[in-house]
Amino acid sequence: MLWMLAGLTVLILVVLVRAIIGPTVIDRLISINAITSKISVVILLIAFTKYEYGLIDISVVYMMCGFAGGLWILRVLTPGDWQLRLPGMKGFEGDKEEVVSDD
Amino acid sequence: MIKWIAYACFLGSFLAFGLGTLGLFRFPDSYTRMHAVGMGDTLGVGLAVLGLLFLSPGWSVRIKLIVIMLLFWLINTTMTHLVAKAGLIHGVQPTKETKLRKG
Image (cartoon, rainbow over all chains, first blue to last red; front, side):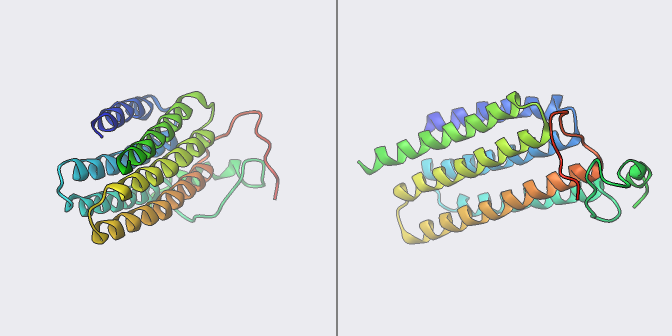
């Protein structure tokens, strides 16, 4: 299982490059989500290589903390209502002021 | 014998993670990258937990692993949906070739 630990570490570093050079905020958010899932699998593999099965609970807690952090970032990113506006629909271009409004 | 079945599951999991990471760099758009990463991480965590189920010593560990898998499938899909919706609200544009339905 050690080769998979090494491979997942390399994949985490590769995803981190996308998190750094990502053009939009959304790319950085999905990169953080991908890193969180990979680290959860790494913690599970460490629990099975070291024969310490208490680390499985730590993996659950890490996954839940990543979810809560992502939700908080989304709450800051989109203030106001959560009504969906597609580009091309009426009123999409006029809502740029609402995005930067204070929450 | 059981060990090699588990290693085959780990190989499939690593392939799924790697293809998700490859899609993160090859796709032209934020939403398509999100699709690639969501698919790859869901299949990767499922196969990694399936491989660890063969190596686990008792039923308490197996029940915890199944709970982790179901929880990850719930959390990752919810997070991908919320990130896509927040991107549309925030004004992240798709590529020029994307055809959006109005209404």
